Image 1: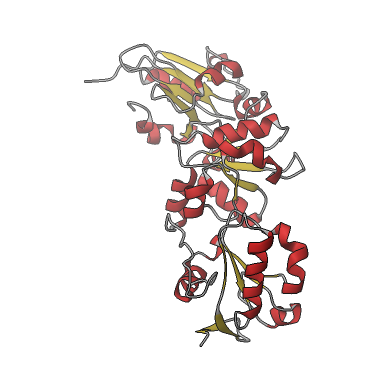
Image 2: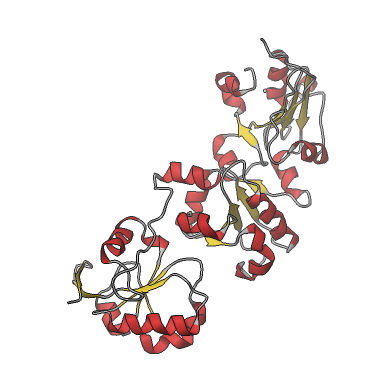
Length: 360
């Protein structure tokens, strides 16, 4: 059965194109677009709407009756767009129109009407107008997330439950602030309210990141974005396993299984905090690539800085100093559940490699 094209379409060019459709009843296509100056008065679309109108159609979770279409070039869409919007650039409209419900910003709006859509509107203020409105935030793509990680420009926040989701796997550099514990853990957010924040959770059907983003805006943060595609999209993009390898206990109390430790170093080193407890001179002469140096005699004064959101593994030359560090943490920070030490003889080579041998 052929679908009716009585849909609400909202189109944007400098911002985005929004299209909503209702199966079996009248719908609307909303197109958000920055209107450029044209000599022909006929170029400006006849039905322009406000940001409040757009807000009414940006619904989360996303409604099956609504499609928001961003008509800007892909490189602008990637850096930020109105939540729920898809990208169909005006220059590629004819090529990509099959992404519309059946096959729609000013010129795109005219094309939408020619395709049979009967209720088409344009959001002339576009994405800039959206971002100026109170309480709004941008949605970003996976490539933007990768760029921010590489440039260390944004605080990435995982809004999923700490256990089991965050422990099972998370985007590199992310901190864990579950939405259910936002009030309790909001102190982990940066003091500077202008620091860029990027929230994510478990994909398009997960609302936790959107809820946390709104809470951050209420706290006064001025640069808030959401990666709605979330961790599943990151896994697909980065080609990583969904599940981070969990540390496995070794033979001695508190020790980590050597084979598991090696596997973590090779596959998911960012999933643990590796702490070299030897002297600064020894650490500088050679250590594990991702290890931070906190000598045993300095550990107590720095113990409050140890995180609770990822496993901690202490290393040294033989397991003696690292074992001491383990018991110190168990005594002074009992709330840290996942803490281990490497009970092994480690030879640190000049080329940066290590030889790990079980202690006799």
